[in-house]
Image (tube, rainbow, N blue to C red; front, side, top):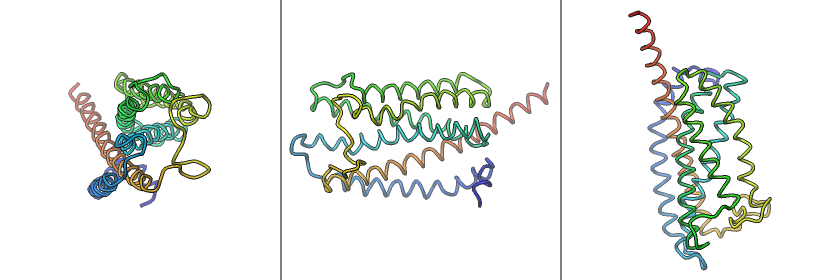
Length: 242
C-alpha cells in the first residue's frame, strides 16, 4: 500500500485498526523494559532519588514539542497541499500534546522544588513551555468553537503555524538568556553529559513514551474519522427529512 493510498481516510482507518493492537503491545513491552531500567538507575550524588523525575519529565517535554511540530507539518498539509488527513492528524495531536506539555510542567515543578527551592520561576524555558501549553488550549478551543470542520481546520492551521515560532524559543532559550534551567545534556555537539547508567534508562523511557504517543495519536485519528462520518450521515438524514 502506497503513501498516496493512505490519503484515503477509509484505507487509513482500516490500516490503523490492524496496526493499533501491535502498537499497544509494543508500548506495554517498552514501558516494562524502561521501568525496570529506570528502577536500577543510580541516584545522583547531588540530587539523590529526585533525579529520577527526569525519566518522565524529559520524554514529556520532548513529546510536547514534537506534537506541535507534527501539527505544524499537518497545517502545511491543510493549507498548501489540501491533504484529506492533515487536519485530522492536527486535531488528534492537539489534546495529546497538551497532556504531555502539562505533564512536563508538573514534573518540572516537582523537580524544581528541591533543586531551586520553589515550584515555579519565570525562567525563559519554563515560561516558553507554559506559553506552548496555552497555545495548545487555544487550538483545542478553536476546533471546538467552529462547527464546520473545513473552516476550523484552516483557522487552526494558521494559529499553529504562527505558534511554531515558540518552538525554537523553547529549544534555545537556555542559550540565549541566563536561565536557571540547565542546558542541553543529551543532544549536544560535544556528546551527552549524562552518565551511561542514567542515559540508557532515559533513552528507553523516550522510546516507550514515543510509542505511547504514536498509539494514542493513531487511535485519536481513527475516532476523528468515525466522528466525521457520523456527522455526515446525520446531515444527510436531516436533509432527507427536510
